[in-house]
Image (tube, rainbow, N blue to C red; front, side):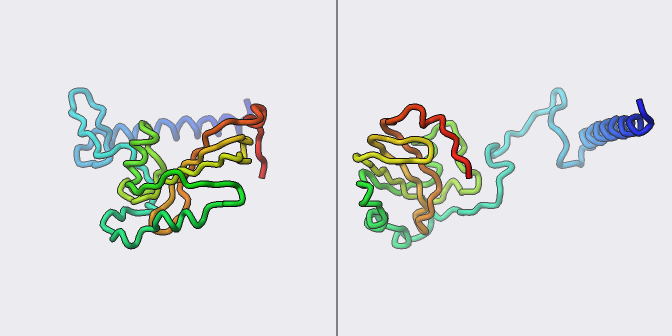
Length: 175
């Protein structure tokens, strides 16, 4: 082994051991707020909402106290539909983002930069004549679209329907 390789290996090992030493000393210091709670017999205080611990700053903060007059109405979204593709608005409702997660994607945490109490518009749009999407071609499709209730910004969507070409599901779209 060359002297450079030995020096690099020694540096890596000492850095690793130093990190372990720092963690152990942090765990032993009762005044350290960042210490680990893994000591035997120590009661662990549950966090308020573990799925929100390492969140990004909220792009869409809560707005439940916003007057309903500020929310985009069904007619606005209906006017934005692609009539040339045969799009038809089948359902529309407002709810908080957390209510949407609970109702449509239970068990998931949702998008982390959107507040749980942000009001969103849920649209179900049918395409009875079919739809060509990025990953598949559908003979009929329903798109559930989640949009911000104030700005109309698309948050997420889900497509379901009859796929015309099963091989198209494995298609990779390159930018």
